[in-house]
Length: 230
Image 1: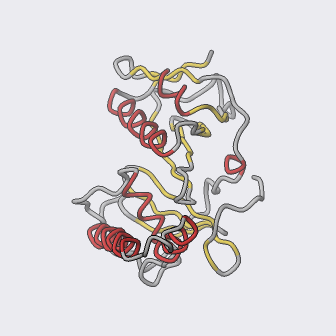
Image 2: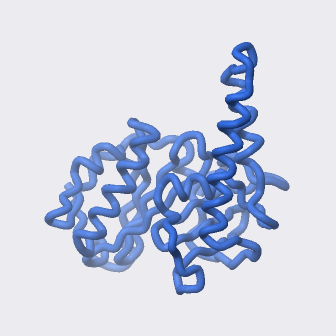
């Protein structure tokens, strides 16, 4: 049984909150865990957003007995949450599960470079609010005959696939960041480790102080996660 010591109770609480939000969208959610030094990266994929959510958690000490020893496992998000002890700032890693396809398609660890054109956090929040209002307005205007799942999905795809400003980041990525509470105003966008848009190869990453949202580019546009495996 592997037990990870977290840096403090705040890290444990943040991890618990992240797992709870993932489970809100998918009660059978799985997460992939990877350790790098004194950091634990927790990857999840909330349904409908078509993005990867990444939460970095600080560990009390490096994982393993020596350099090069790492943890890499896909586990149940629910079991991980149940095994989390906030008072002791520790978490027991549950048994591995058969990973969903997305768990084999993770963004790279390095090679990230800044991308221009990302609006400030407050503008991003307003953009999501406007998109939600537009979706509600357009769906409420549908007649009963047209109010089908296919039509609702079509309207949703049209709205959430729009790009943010002059970037290639879809609005759905910002929506995911806000829904998972990665995007929290007020925010100092100029602070180190603050809000930023980064790219590495086929990936874009919206980084915030509370977590990241990653999307994979397919061809000339951003699409659902591909099938290549790291």
